[in-house]
Image 1 (cartoon, rainbow, N blue to C red):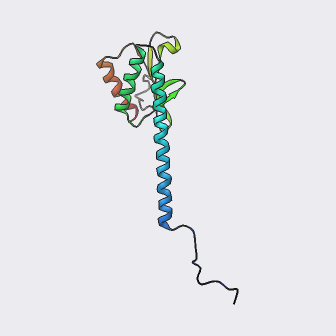
Image 2 (image 1 turned 60 degrees about the vertical axis):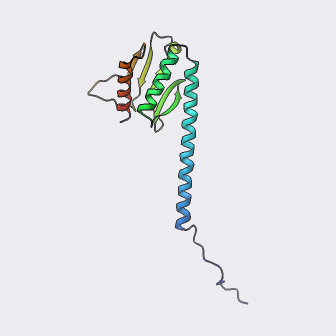
Image 3 (image 1 turned 90 degrees about the horizontal axis):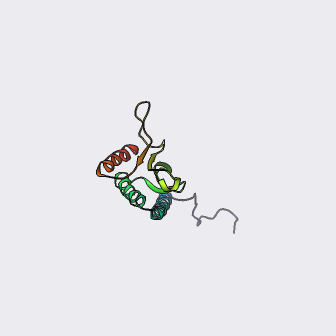
Length: 149
């Protein structure tokens, strides 16, 4: 018997196009799963932090959380310097700062430079909050929508 090439062995050149496509799809599924888990963990941490706040800030922070989720569902809740924050593509867009945490006279809704609020040569990036009425809620809804546009 000769030591030549076997004609019964199938020549392999790696994965087929279908196999590569299936692997790419699975990798995409795993990335999406990881993102969903991270978002759920971030929301749990934010809700736990809000639950620790004294009233009336707890109610205000919870209402802000609901407003932000309703008007910018693509933002991911997370903690940022121990404060409830909301990020897009890993960058914090807006955050709530408790008055009690920093011993100030009012809570603050702040926006980072990742927020799309640029208007002219000067614009506000933080807003003092003493209470949330329908007027403030409407203003915050508009600001959050603009920030992620």
